[in-house]
Amino acid sequence: MAGDVDVHEELVLGQAADEGVAASLASVASQANAHVLHSYGPRVAVAQVDPTDASVLAEALPGDMTVAPARVTKSARRTLSDTEELGLAAFELRTSDRYAEAKANRPFAGVLWDGAAEASPPGCAELATAPAPAPSGDALSHVTAPLSARLSGSVAVGLVIVEGPTTALQFDATERAKVVAETQNGATWLGGRHPVQPVTWRWDIDIIRVDAPPDPHAADLEALWRDPAMAALGYGPGLGGVQAYAEDLRHQQGSDWAYVTFFTKYPTGWFAYASIGGPRLVMQYDNDGWGPDNIDRVFAHETGHIFNAPDEYASSNCNCGGSWGYYGKPNANCATCASGGGVPCIMKANTWDMCPSTPYHLGFPICPGRLGVQFRGNVAASSTRRWFTHSWPADCHVVWSVVPTTVRAGAAQIRWDVHVERASSGYITYWISITNLTTVPCDVEARYAVLGST
Amino acid sequence: MRVGVQHRGQVNASATERVFTYNWPADWHVLWYVTPTNPRSGAPQIDFDTEVERASADRITYWIMIRNLTNQPVDYELRYAVLN
Image (cartoon, rainbow over all chains, first blue to last red; front, side):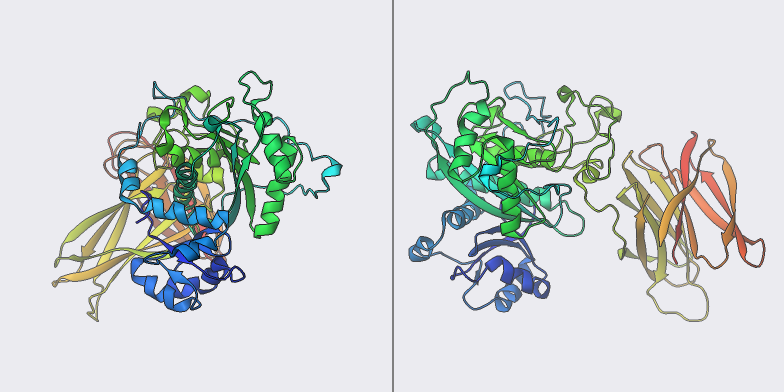
């Protein structure tokens, strides 16, 4: 298990740069019930796969691709690009004992983002207007299609580590790998909340060293280092240049969405912030009092902003109204007004939880239609037994039916009745009473049909 | 298939309310279900049953009985799904 996000991930390595591991993985994924979670260049990918299906995946892939390699040789590492090497190092770090220990001992685990005396809350920067297009001299094409309308499908992330001229402003190899591991961990968790298919993250990593001396009194603390970094990548100044880069990333990676994440040690106006709706997210490596071991959760929180989710902690001055995100839903889990202060959520606290409102804001499909068996059991002769099943999203239309699985022809065997409990504003508990009408025990299965959402 | 909310209301404590909804085309396959809207965790709040009246050759009236299983008023919404 990599990280602490309860997803079984496997590293997949290719040898030839012209054979995209992620593309090959995607083409055989259904055979092995696997899914590409991360790609770092053409030769390094991370797949979600059931441990029992890892061998099926290995057999389905071309012969020069390796699933869960026991070791990666020095010569193989030498062939990797910077992006590929960092993706590999990040996964190796996430599967290490020290990483597991760090995650088990996170500072301020579960604490509200505005509840730690020694740490500031992560911020968000709302844009009054969309970023201005880059100057025509940039020779970049701009399209007006949103870069991050909803968190689904595939997302290209330009991860830019911006270093400065002094040692204090530079990242060593361990810190670079840490940044990539933390963003990988946070993205796996966040994208894994999608109810139909986890999000695929396509990373493009650059380490840019600029000459600008740090100036904590600069009028625009971000532009001081961001604009030279973007110039080094061939883009213009301001958020227009960042948007142009994200648009190019989306095109190059063939992704549905894109944004740019900057990590730096330069002074910034806040230790972590992002634009609602993109195109950029900024984080400092030290992550204020939360520390580098919480970069993953702060990154997930800020990526929530990129995909239009609002803050839910009280000091953000949130309220329970508004029209946020893909579905234009109010911020119902805002701590200042939700019943009991609301429920734990990545947009409110340092936690791997998501409240019922955030999926709407992120644009997840709500209540995709599906059928299933929720439980199986046995009812004794001439008796009634009651089960409950909880945490069904309240907006989902769900109907229940029960069938006997014990064969006995000639007369009805069971009858059922459904009682309903609104366990919270966002979730429903169903209580299903099943009566055995016969004089012998009867096995049953309770089936559900999710029909859609209101 | 489409889903919706036909009616919102309240049932008094430990009471049963019967609502009807009419003029539903007879060739529509319609399911009815009820969910409480005010949270009260720990036990079921609502039971419901559906009865059906063929009001005309081509129209159906549905009668839905909603029983409050608690000792406090319960707000509810009556939901439907047209399956065809």
